[in-house]
Length: 237
Image (tube, rainbow, N blue to C red; front, side, top):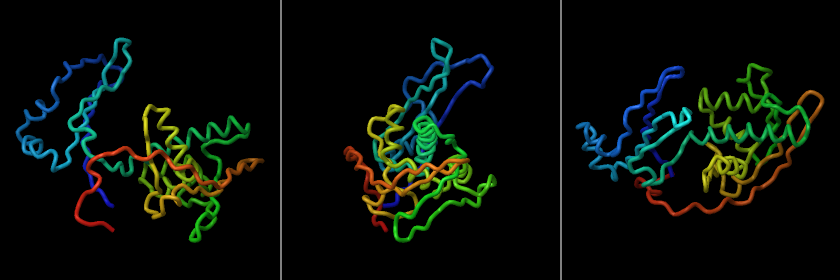
């Protein structure tokens, strides 16, 4: 099913090096929104429009450290397809895995170590080149992260997804405080639920070393919790 959603994210903050002058926090987000006449019809039809709003305030705490405080309107009322925002989580998880491999193997593995992805499915080929990488034309975690944030590359996300796996991304998110994260499929590559848990052999080839991560199939993540608003529209491809 294809979902379309328009998130509204508002951030307020104090520029670095300046003395914070934080206004009194709003006590009623909806009443403040309704003070803008153009927003009233939208708020009145919020459920039909699937409207969700998160307002973030970057404010100093009692220690003078900047912290994020959020106020919400209907946040989480319906399922909200995260789209390309999942790429951030894959990037973080991949960088964490590189650091873990460097520590566990004692090898000089880093974000610029060339990677080789072995064929997994019948339509796959051995992949070791990324022509967009001006630093040698190879696949690296740094290059795929670069492509994720410069052009929102789905292929780059898929490389990191296959390097880390569903379980690796979920574990990274759990460490960040999310209780039941589920990122469970490649992007723009249609596979079954089981195929999306299958990961290819990945080689990391550096100066004087080669380290292989064996192909594997991850265990299913816990089932998604019940949530409203999953079915949208009249048909799907």
